[in-house]
Length: 80
Image (tube, rainbow, N blue to C red):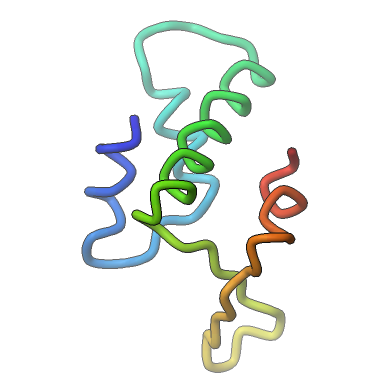
């Protein structure tokens, strides 16, 4: 899962929703809560390894300015 998410983000950003979509695309059926937990673990693993960063864009998206989410705020963004 982590490797696939990294490949998705090579040329562009990958939204957090994409992690959930990738988990749901697996052949193994799961509940929404299970899929969210797996997607969260994959993103947290990539963040902890330093392979990705978490950014947020604030509305309005006039110029798509993104700001880095501080480490202390990541859990709140990821819904942990």
